[in-house]
Image 1: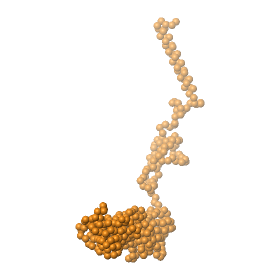
Image 2 (image 1 turned 30 degrees about the vertical axis):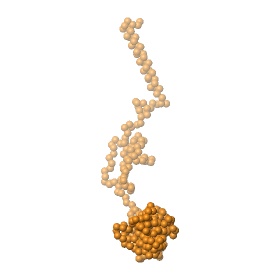
Image 3 (image 1 turned 90 degrees about the vertical axis):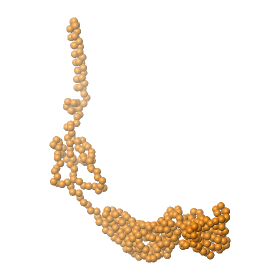
Image 4 (image 1 turned 60 degrees about the horizontal axis):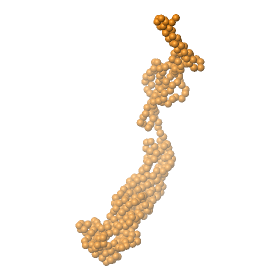
Length: 413
């Protein structure tokens, strides 16, 4: 268990947290570190402003690891918040976690380190009504409940008739709008943003947007809206410049373009005392052997036509499975290895290599008669002489036949 004291930013004067750290090592060397978080006292992290639903409070711890695995894990966790006003308590995540993998056996030591807290505001708009904290009224102001038909925000307004009466809102965001009534005979309003006057000319709620004096009453009118601001704390001030009626119905605060949590919304948490360390022993891997073929199985049947000379053992490197080789007058075919979907190789019994006798015992080299090339330098002179004799014999036989036919016809003498 580790105790933390958090200060700065959303921690205010200080917040105490308790982390119950549980490291675990699962099958396959996967280690998981979980922190169960809780507040230790009534003092809690507070909202820095008005925010719509969806803001997040994120915690990130550090665990230093030594021994069979050296490094750091950073357990993280976040908790989404509801709609917030300044000072609202923030819910912390119940647990933080991070994982790593241990590649060898041995003792692993886990020791907790620092803890950081970050508040990330939700983007959107929130209406700040008169009765919510954050608005300060200076001078004689009265709060009036109004009928539903008037259409005021949450059916109430603040009203003053005193010159220099003021209403001030401190907010955190990127834009703000002043919302009130337009009605006849209302006094001009001066607006200040972060201490500087930003209305020149003054806001005139007694006129419509075209500058024509009002003859009726319009509620929830946007009387003034700021330009886009850098995200952060700002102050807007409404000042009644004449001794005439003036109204403040609400302010609309916009939060947008917040790429990452602002530093001033963070808190740093330091360990209180020495929490010690946790040691876990990771066992070594266990191996299991797959039984070989049953010795009682019948031996493989041999081909009766197999050449007995093929039983000689070849001491050369065996070919790869699936290849076909020719040598020693035999064709050797090695079986293909079967595929498997499992990532773990499976050991099986020995596979017998079968040898098949080729259809031709010897590889032909020469003539058709003997299957061997004739002696000599390999040139076919005998065949050429036989061909010449055959052609000359055929020509002589033809000449003799013509002489005989001529004799029968009264022929040659």
